[in-house]
Length: 262
Image 1: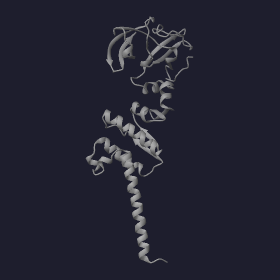
Image 2: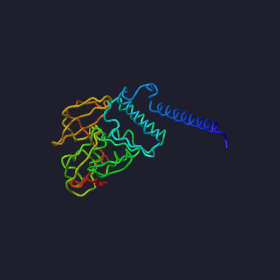
Image 3: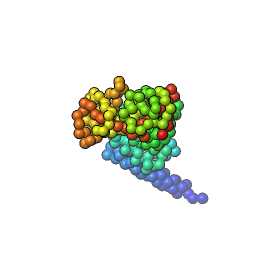
Image 4: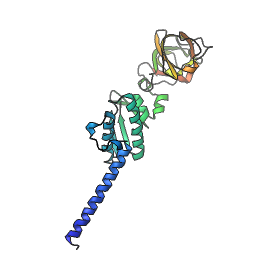
């Protein structure tokens, strides 16, 4: 048996070693959340975004199997929100922690997620990869939730494969039976087409930089249309458009479930 004094010394060395390891690990996490320049400050002295990163660091150091982030960006301004999203993605990839990110902001969901579960009135209506939710929504609720500006949705009669009132918009006939449906067209699906006979009445437009958002109407239906700024070679009062058949979403008017029209 070793003397007590040696045993105590070994114990102290082990404790110091463990403490140094914890400190080193903590410093590594502090660098990961980009707070190394604020290490001497208390959380109350930090900005809202920095405090969010402190909370994430505290959770990560416990090495959880699952990390829950409940509306972590709700109190941040747009610029800070964008930078924090990038940091959250980097943290998640570096530590490989399964992360559940709760948000009502579809842009946040699209930016940070590998898969998204969309809930409506407490029920999961679709779980998919972000782009799959955008391109293949199962319901009009999902279609309207994903995408900005939001998808154009309006009730429309289909007769002989044509959208009544919008029959000049689509060159091909839809392969569905006659009846009333909910039609969805994304703003960017509209293509300027000088040969088209379909025109909209423009109410006003917004310059978004590369793109122009046109607020228009046709047959009392309001439409949001996105076009490239460089593609605009005509006035903004009346513009001719066309939409490809595959860009039309058709939903059952009652259930709001998507209907195949190929």
